[in-house]
Amino acid sequence: MTAQKSALITGGAGFIGSHLAERLLADNWEVFVLDDLSTGSERNVAHLRARRDFHLIVDSVLKSSVVNELVHRCDVVFHLAAAVGVRLIVEEPVRTLITNIQGTETVLDYCNEFGKRVLVASTSEVYGDRREPEPLVEDGRRMYGPTTSRRWAYAESKALDEFLALAYHQERGLDCVIVRLFNTVGPRQSGQYGMVVPRFVSAALSGRPLEIHGDGTQTRCFCHVQDTIRALTGLMDAADVSGEIFNVGSTERVTINELAQRVLERTGSQSKIVGVPYDEVYGQGIEDMLHRQPSIDKISGAVGWEPTVGLDGILEDVIRHVRAEPVLVER
Image (cartoon, rainbow, N blue to C red; front, side, top):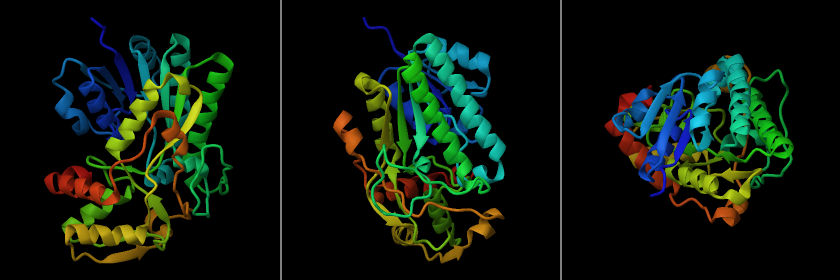
């Protein structure tokens, strides 16, 4: 009989992490979740707590002794813990930088020490201030705004995570794979930190105005969380992609103005759409990426992955969830 495999998910009580935990448990993994519940929520994994093969450790990825013990006892590590969301980044840049850089350094160091394979979740933000609508490729050039703009603190911190993971791989042989996530959405995602889809849906269902930050011409591609989870597990299982970076996201591009209209159509809401300058939202100057569309040729060639749920299907899932649990999404 094959021994049960075990996985550590840092940030596993968050939106993506909780769905990943469900998937691994369904595949007969033993799952350890490390989360300080600062942006994640115990509610996201409450339905898993009674399982003997699920373990929630409420502590910080910055706690070296805790990370040491958990990495040592698990077979693989999914490192998802990070400070996320534009609002949090702007309001708490110190927390953003320390969590993302120091936390990743701690995880990578112990994965290297104990010889454990690790998947590092990065972000499309690392591409920086892109003005062109062309799909972004993993080895493309990056461009950032000034260091005086807090907007880029998150992007820079995640880029450093990538550099560090690649350095461990090249210099010390760490078995790692890096994924750049593009706007993953779905049930259980909170609008508290500026995530646009749950924010729009919640507003539409409650009759409040849908607030578009900026002029709404910026474009995004939204990927269903279940498609993202398939990509993460597929890349973790692909032993021949160590030391590689992969985009994970949808290629269905939509403007934020169009997104707002589709949310109103899907909900049947009479809510108004209003534009709000970034300065009014965050209280200080902030820049935004104009376009963000991934090239997914690399991951498709490596593990045969591509998204299966379109934007309309995503909206239906989110709307269904918000109608069932409006307070959780408003959190």
